[in-house]
Picture 1 (cartoon, rainbow, N blue to C red):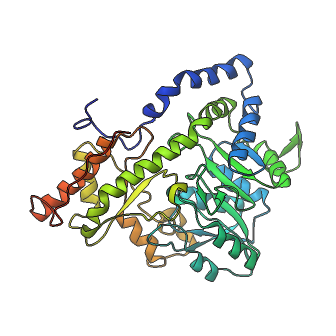
Picture 2: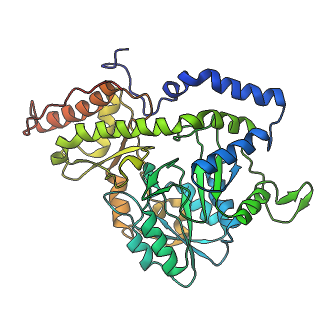
Length: 399
C-alpha cells in the first residue's frame, strides 16, 4: 500500500484485528453456542487470566471503566466523608467515579513534563479526611510505584490505581494494577486491550474487596435474590470477555510495538524540540505502553496547537487532544469551587498537548509522513525551505 498519500487515522483497529479475525469470530461463536451470555464461564476465565497478567489475585469484570472506579472505591470502603486525591488532568470518568462513590474529590496539579500526578502536590493536599489517592497512569505511563508506596505508608492512604490506559505497563518492578489495594481498567475498543463495545474490570489483591465488588456489580446480591449491598447492574458481558480473552495473548507484543513506534517518533521529532515541539517525557522506558503518543506544542512554537491540528487534518492526518479541558474547569463540576489558575501545569498542558496517530500496525513511512508534515508546516510558517538545523528526517525500516 502507498502510505505517501493515504489517510492516516488516529486509531486503526482493522490493522490490529485482521490477523486474528478467525480467533475473534471463534470466541464469539463459542459463547453463542453455549448460550452463556451473563456472568458466564468465559468471563470467569478472563477475570482470572487478566488479574494474573497484572500481577494481582482477583479480577471482577464490570460494564465500563467508570463503573470499575465508582464501584471499586465503594468496595474498598471509600464513601461519604472521605477525601480522595486525584489529578486535575485526567479523563472525566476518574472524577465521576469518585463522586459516584460518595467521596469528595480533591484535585492536585501534574508534572508538566510527564503529565502524571505531582506527588509532592498530593502530599500537601492531605488532610485528616484524606482516605485514598488515585494515581492515573496517563497515556500508558505509570506513576512511580516506589514514591506512591512511600506516600501511602507515611500517611496511611489507600492507593486506588486508574489504569484505564496502562494495560500491562511496568515501572520499578511493578505492573499497573499491582501497586495498591485495587485498580480500575477500561476495555473501551481503542484501549491497548479493547473489547468490541464497553467494558471494564477491577483487579485487587483483596479477596474481601473482590467479593464485595461481585455483589455490587450484580444488584448487591451475594446470591440470587439475596441483596446485602446497595448495588447496581454492571456486568462485563460474556461475549466481550471471550473477545478480550482471545486478544490477551497478543497484548504484550502489541505493547512492544507501540513502544517501538514511540521510539521512532522520538527519533524523528528530536530536531524539532528547538522549535517548540516536545514529546511528553517517558520515565518508564520500555515499560511505557503508549496508549497515546502525545507531544507538547509550546508557546515558542511558530504554529499554535489548534492551527497545527487543523493543518494536519487537511493533509489527511488525524490527531486528538487528551484532554482539552481539565476536570476542575468542566462546567458540570463548578460546584466543586475550583477556579482557573488553581492548577497551572494542568491548564497549560491542556492548551499544548496533541496526540499523534498510535496503534499496532502503524507503519514507519506513515510515522515519517506525520513528522515530515509537521516539519514542513513549521518551515512554511517560518518562510524557510529547510529549518536552520539542517537535519534530514531519516528513513526508517518498516515495522
